[in-house]
Amino acid sequence: MLDDNKIIELYIQRDESAISETSEKYGAYCEKIAYNILLDKFPPILKFSGLSQQKLDIQIGEHRRYSS
Image (tube, rainbow, N blue to C red; front, side, top):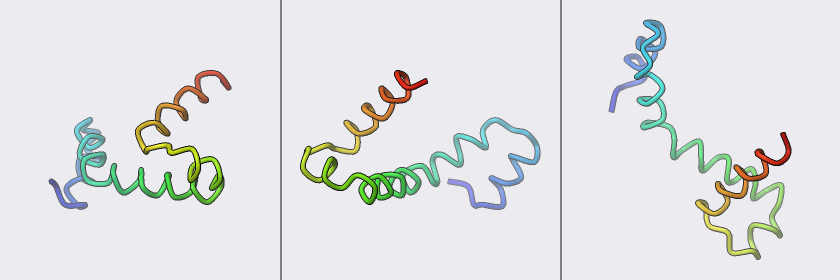
């Protein structure tokens, strides 16, 4: 895993691997933040539906497809 300065350098060089490096380093962190935001906004739905993170990702993807 690269440090932040090296990742930034990849972006400056317009190297596409910067995206995968960023995802590897921060992907799980960003997903957790997004899940917590949704949990704050829709607590009854998420707490009582038994949705896992994976099922939630699928439902959000389906919602985006149908609401576009």
